Image 1 (tube, rainbow, N blue to C red):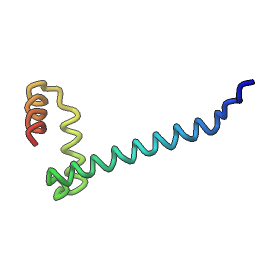
Image 2: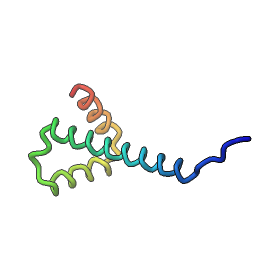
Image 3: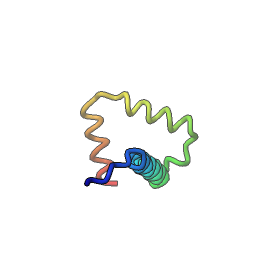
Length: 72
């Protein structure tokens, strides 16, 4: 006879894994901010710059940024 699945335990394990992945992502982004020297900006300046970057649709600019990031 098969053992019944414990859906609650499986769901909790998945939630724990998702929480761990999110924490790792936040940590890596913070390390990137520090490594690039962007930690010298205020939070408002950094947020504003990131918003402009995210809103940019110019493919040439994005490609140039990607190349510069790859060199970094």
